[in-house]
Length: 198
Image 1 (tube, helix red, strand yellow):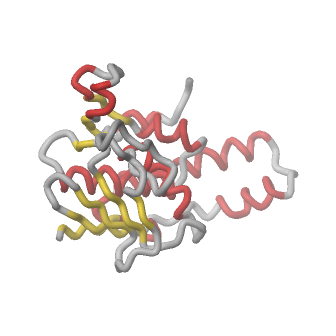
Image 2 (image 1 turned 180 degrees about the vertical axis):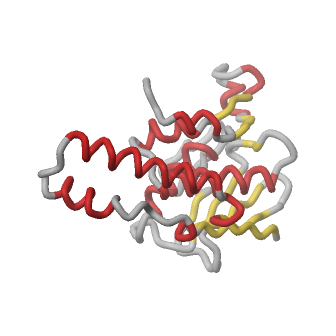
Image 3 (image 1 turned 45 degrees about the vertical axis):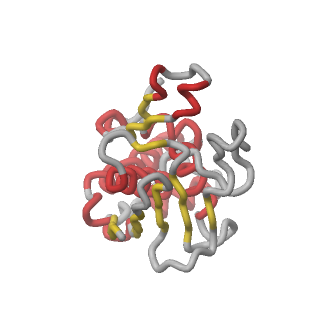
């Protein structure tokens, strides 16, 4: 499996999942999720998927001292599920945190419940708010990748691809330039992300 080399340089999200421990999936319930794994699930790497990963990684590091507690995280989005790219972002957040709106795990008794931990149309000014249920801390994150411009060759190449008259060489160049912007977004996290701890 060949991926852009910068995928392997991106910090992993360190998690502890009590449900995974109970069910014997991971020793002590401890594991890491990488950007590559998120890309596999999403099916692609783009500024939106990267932003969802960056927001979640940064928020969890602010909320927990050490491994984040998966299943302990409530996530609220300013947008509705159907608006813009909220659905794409929420899918990535769900993969990492376990939080879902209604479709998640119903729990074992009253433990390990994952549904109803994600809400949309929240009364916030940021992109999303992450809250730890166990320690009561919350953090708001705002993601804006516009500070990292796209290569000017991208749009003409995309138009040729959509019109189905791009050569294989042009398709390859488009993919390379597309991932180059994603790489630059990860290299400029302090510029694309604003984090406010409540």
